[in-house]
Image (tube, rainbow, N blue to C red; front, side):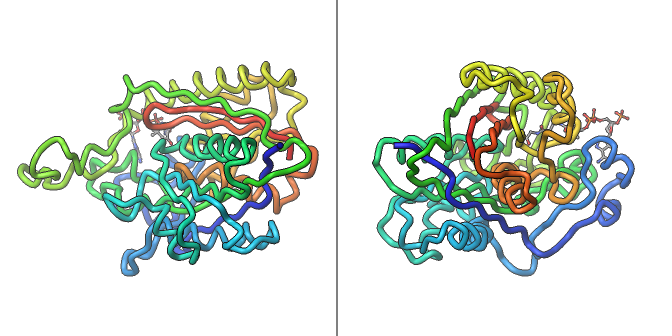
Length: 331
Ligand code: UT7
């Protein structure tokens, strides 16, 4: 039994936040953000209307179901990758399941941040190849704008992240689709990019004393260290995946890398000796949407005619954990 992506979908909240708007929050500039990250705009939820990743994922799922010619009741399992669930527990997966109106099917979260979609994809691939489930909804969705520090200390992280959702429906196929997935993690670097609170290690779960109560609820990142590892690890895992597949880098029709910083994609492309146009990028419009970035790219690339049947595709990601991975597919 082969496993193949039968439908893709994406959704971003309507509110567009420009770099110019961020200069009202932070000591930053459009030029700095574009030069250091490649980001021009990102989408954030409207802070007056409570919105969670399951709400965004619901819209993305409608697009994917329509493309696959399936109804929500055809789904057999939901694997939801997110670092920004609506609640401490339960996970975002069950909120989405309830919205979709498909009670009783398994629905669970994967917490591997920027690599979450690839971790979820590997599970879906194996579930379908083994015959455990027929149609698995793989979700990457984030609402990160509510986790950003809008004080002066927050400017490095605050300009990068965006909200959004992307999904892929993995189903059975009589021809190869998802060929291989390769996953890695290194917990020694867990605190290089993390949100330390709420924490179950002590009472109260959130630090409320000191100069900045609740400071631990914001993302903290050692940007340079993360950048350095991202380039090295993604280059390594892509080279390994290509070797396993017996593919020359040049034979790949499209690379889709996690959209963290356009300079990371440029460095990986350079290392592989490939032009940047072999990589699908949309970071200029959406910023870094963490688990959602790869599936949003896939949905957009397909609709832009950059993915056609028979194309060789490589996906790769790196992020908090550290966690990273790659996947090889024939579209
Ligand atoms: O998605 C998960 C994985 N995440 C990533 O892969 C992100 C990896 N890291 C990065 O993309 C980059 O490190 C950043 C975009 C986060 C930062 O870019 P950088 O080129 O590494 O900047 P930096 O942190 O080394 O800071 C350079 C300068 C500093 O000023 P000084 O010390 O040289 O005077 C910062 O204070 O830029 C300053 N700076 C800013 N200036 C204007 C930092 N943030 C900003 C800002 N606007 N928003």
